[in-house]
Image (tube, rainbow, N blue to C red; front, side, top):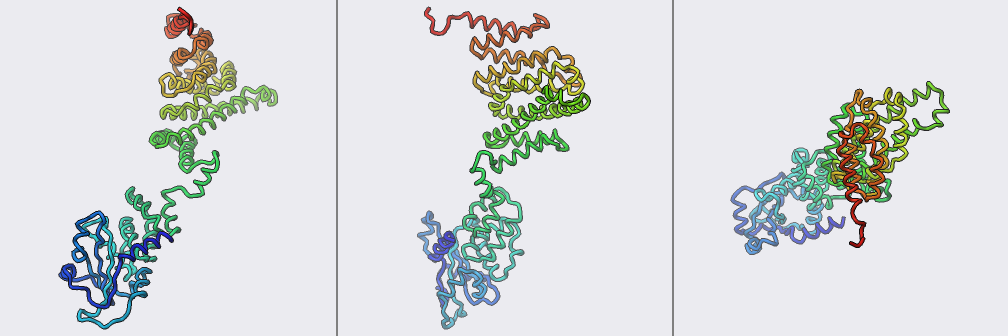
Length: 478
């Protein structure tokens, strides 16, 4: 209300003069008289529209009032009363007077601010005056641009019915980006209810913003949308490959990397916890004792099949994280999975179980580790050396088991290149302090068991370590 009051007081200072005598025969009046003025039914008043000079335009200020562009409208004072501005103006200042030779019409002057379209400076005002007479809003408002042109004038003149018609139209139709910007610009001038209806589609609701600020558990609307998209991409969509590709594009193009990282971290943690729970059930000795053999095999089959599905989801999430360079938290979490790697080793040693039920599980787990390790080596994911050490220490035993099962793992699946993961681990080891590298290199001796000539990466890693270890210690005197 305060905004409208300020608007009204500002416009009142320059809007109008009213008299019962004809307008002066100035050059501007003569110019406007050269073409017939617009006339509405039951006209008893002349409304003169004239451009209000821009304060920055010295030429307009110097030209004087008589030379400003103007337009005369013959209007009905009864129709103008539909505008609260004109109603107040007429009631305050109108007084009957003898008619004049020009027809006896009183005169009203309305200053018009420089419009967006210089070629039709009075268009919006004429339309609003027409609507004051006809109330034909449906015939005047055909597009968001029409409504946005008319609405500021309707607000200026306190023409409530027109304001309502414009906002109702805008609320119901799509907007272009430029029209959206104009809605944001004019919304502070609108009544609260109308403004809320328009802003609802382009700004989060106050309740959502407040809850997002109230605690870490609450998601912002953008985070909730991204979370829902990720969930749809990895769960049950009829065309999963196309959906995943589309969601991956949206994540990549999203402007806030922090927001994307938060949502991906949540999804990764959720899937990882599910995998850990399923693998824990398989490895639990209590489960093996408490359930009879046939029922246990059926449950284990379901658990392992579900684990494979969730590891596939993990791999997709990891690829998105690495692609967007937001995998730091996930790499740290993956390096801390000593319990999961122990359960995986139990499964891999039970060859009949995993080979007959889920032959792809070791392959998928190895791909996850390889993707993380490659991102660390390539500098896509920067993590402290403690994390790099734990990553190799936790997952090297799984790699050593998988290396001995390359042929079984290839059955029906594309086997990952175990040698690539070996090389990547050796590169990570080369980034560690000499004592840590010594400990981990000794666990890599299995890389040479196939053929000495087939492990140049291991030979190079040991040569590098011995060269470094042979140097004088730090701070030692020459």
